[in-house]
Image 1 (cartoon, rainbow, N blue to C red):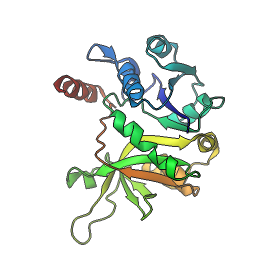
Image 2: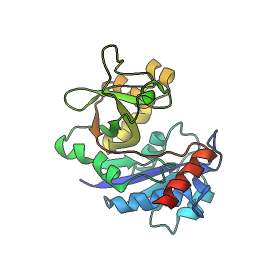
Image 3: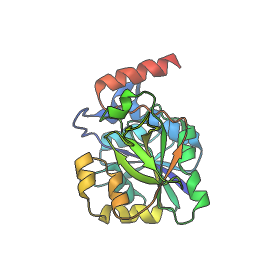
Image 4: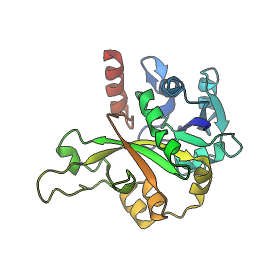
Length: 239
């Protein structure tokens, strides 16, 4: 199974413009992400971007660079363009704002593909760390079936603890796709649930595709704001 790790990166974040090149411990954040992806040691790593400033920073990092259209609505769409002519079976989507991601998590997200030749997509989850997270709309929850496939993702409290405490799972925003499915993904029509919850993975479930969920001790810290960057730097320096 040939695996490629893609890192979609753009400069136009609404909450944190220029985020990929923001300095984290004196180094652009995107380079931290590239290092973690390379440490996973699964296959070639590439950055998919529409900005030449990112290209200049990444070009000597050990990752390839794929220039893509500036019009993509999501990282998944950007990766789909980048891998069209690439020789790979599975593509891992490592978000460009996950500088502390564990390489073990990247390796874990591809494991379900070895057991299911038809699996289109996979992701990760971990048990909620606190009861308050169940009600936190910024914490995305996932409910799985007996086969470890996602039934639904939500910002709401699922499963709702009507009786006793809920054994809820927090979704980790790391994805892997079989290449054939990733090329189909941009053509899938957005659904009402996706637009309401603002969770693009709901489009996949709406159109009847499976998402395998591997549950483990995966606690990734994303950077959405300058304050998140400060917290990530404190964690990095304390390691």
